[in-house]
Image (cartoon, rainbow, N blue to C red; front, side, top):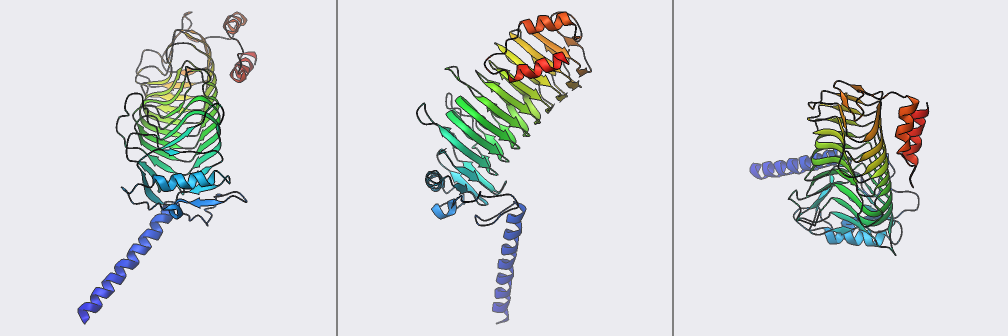
Length: 388
């Protein structure tokens, strides 16, 4: 009898311990139920919540919860609702397709969506007649399988493959991607990627990319993100992208901190970049009308800022570059200006000066090569600086 009481006592104590650990653990993860508020609005007034548990998700890998999540998204799109991802480890065996007018909202790092293979985790893809519009992904941990993506597949955690407008990705943790953590391709506009953490991708971290077929990404804000341990560029702006602002990001241990390729009309400012091959690199082909301002770049294995010979109308202003291992703090082989930068090593520019001065002739020569273009917001800032 004593033994039975002891067993019952131990079992009850163990059950109580599990309950306490679970509650405390969920609270530490920032857990809220779909009916609670964590001091940060889960829903706006009148929005309906679609908890994926109610659609059959169980949150126990390797059980595939992709159908449950997709059902919740499809239904939420009809009422501009919120798809709620509670604390749990929700594995998916196929791509989740985002719909217009949907918010995906988790509780923080413990609301995990885990891809079990080489495919996009969450894909936005519209067409010329029907765009994906007004979407939000917030406070969710999305992680990939981490295997190399097959050639041509380019599997990413959040993929905007075309025709997307008015999208926000905010306060997410993005880890272990087979390709990029996030990218935007053809005709994607008005995108905000803010206050996320990116850790470990096999290609780029955040990629407001573009398309060789026509319109790239435009009107994109990449702000306040922390990016670490990325195989290629921490932030990669590419092919026909315009009006991209890369601001207040912290980037470390990447091949390049920020890379530009065949894109124009953008601003890179107030970023902290360390322990990368190049801090900021303008990669091949034509890049123009870019302001690089007030960035702190440390411990580059090569140059702090490296510009290609085809780059033009790029103003590097008031950047601080230290402890770079390359020959130059700034290596510029194009027609650009470097003014008021704080550097430890020389600046190499074609016309031989260590750092440009604001002589009227030099400014005129520089501006002669600059056109305002279809997206003049970067040029407006450049002209302000040169006229002050």
